[in-house]
Image (cartoon, rainbow, N blue to C red):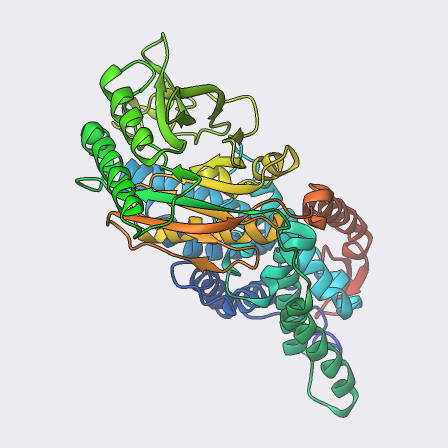
Length: 536
């Protein structure tokens, strides 16, 4: 006879130490609740303490279920999480790309549900492993989502929900993967504790789980953080704003450039009047000059005038044209106050966003959206964004690149003294901007470097090495913020270890998935009393 559905217990009376699986409607409700909890943990809601609860709810939903049910429940939780989380992509790309991206992200989370169901026999036999297995599964699932398809899309990582949590400090030891592991392991501890029967025999294990949860959530507060050891430098960020939000910001190119030039000139006036300190560097956001200043003399003159007025270099976010009209480059271009652009200190974005900055499978994508041909072919850069301004060395990343561990780390290992994130949120909304700022906070702690994010429309801010935010601007307003930033600093363990913490977690996950196979093939007695081989 076919194996019994794992939604039902095998024996007529489950052993007292083995939890009965949940009914499918209850499991589905838990999966939906898991998606909601994970969504609310992330910006702009920032209820970080819901992240372990979301993990626990999904772990409970998939435990001891068939593989297809685990996959479906994880996918359901992913739909609830990613459709509202990524709603801002609809503003620029329309419904179809938003739906496709959200569905693809949910499908990867579905694999975590499938893996959780697969490992159920291991958890039933060794309940104490539930926190470890849950933490490893989430790290491995995020590692896959960060890389595939088309280079991955790391939005919605658990680590990015922990900006105000004690667990953020763990980023200094193992980066985003360690933060995700700790939070997910805390969720695994919660579900393990919830499954326990309250009896005299279970009080000791329950207490152990409670202590483990407390250590995983509050313990990181004791993690020491690196303080930058180099001299302080004064940096100004200019948020010039755009005339209108939306996809047509490109049609407003001259107005956007003029806004940033005018704001920088006003800063120079304020410096001369003693209202603002003299900066060592001014940073403009991505697309602050969507007119190529290397080919357009009017744009070049405007930027040169602003640089001469303030008397220090300006890092300009520029769109550079090429000899092929269909190809462009997204660059951070250092503009000197006397000599103009320094082409030896230019960073070209290495990871253009598929379907937004370049179009894979363009002929196929054209069948999905009529906006496909609005997307030009953005060429990728070939080196890390290390820019020597004279006063300090920047580690520049552009827009979504801040979500990718390796791109940010490369700038640090190659000599960055501060981290700079140039972005343009004019085609999105405030929720997306705050999601990016959460990533900057994690990166500052991860690498022990003062950091900044500067946007055309906001949110722009400075971030210290403890993840604290300073001088944050409002969304869709113009503003200039001047702040002292410490340079340099000792390399954190996370910087030195690089990809190894994540690689070890993924390798352990694969080993555990393989080792679970023998337990899934054990012979059991079904509720009808017939002996059968059950794929558990």
